[in-house]
Image (tube, rainbow, N blue to C red; front, side, top):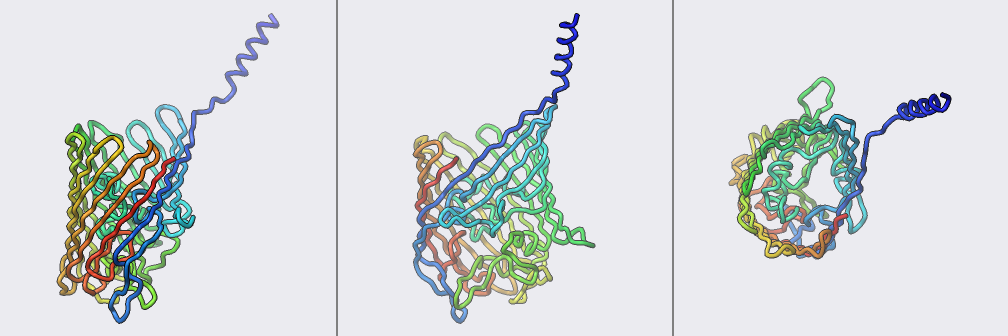
Length: 409
């Protein structure tokens, strides 16, 4: 009898021990570094005229290569009933110097926590917007050309120049090939629920050989909310997009830096792809609007008013010659309307790439981008070529070449 009671007591004690749900944390990352060359890189602006020459540099891929160097932690905890707690902390860094990327933010690439179940997930923190999720994969830069293959100065943000702070994001799982997402970023300004707010929507479909995606982003006071959300950026009194350069420094983001006074930034994009054997043919189109120029959202030294509207068309194809060798080619055409009576601007860009896998985790690649600028850019000057990630050209033409090596862990 005593033995029986002891056994029952031991069994009851066993049942009282708490059962902990399964959890996992994964350390991951990418190191991407290489040699970059351009035939024309600005060094200064003298009496309104850009100066510069050719440049060789060892650079991290965050600005010119396939994948910006990073390390991150990704975790999940099973809460039962199909519900999971999830988080991502992802730091960007420059492999050539060890410095923090994303303006000095410790986890400037991503930093969020949330819940997921078989129907989708809800996350809160610093995140990518739905345009990145649903449209970026169809652009050359989001598929095989890297940051330097972005549309001029990454004007439509399809290559993640800017993330979204203070954001709540909902993303559905795929149902019959369809999925969707929505994001809202709180402005956090007392007395104004719309100042500095950002919201975005996106949806996509994948089925067989065909894929499609579309998205829309609306950012109020973008000079602060969208372009000024890293530690090295200032307030509405500073131009957080770029600069007009000086006698000791080059210009930055001349394609659209002059539009810091826009009250609203709107980006509408769509893309599609079709797989035919070893080839994937893709098309992406975006419409980027800097609306209501002349507001108090940012400086306006050139006295702009009205709207600056960019339209970009990106046609590209990638082809797997062998399982280890990928070739890519693409063409991008970007046009801007007339602002303050100027003649608008046009940018023509050709992207070429070869990527060879040495193993499942290591590859070497060669990227080449050629760009030609026409018209007048946002700084009121004769438009200069400006390949994303490189210093703008001192002329209307620019060639960028990069030989790099990438390792994933």
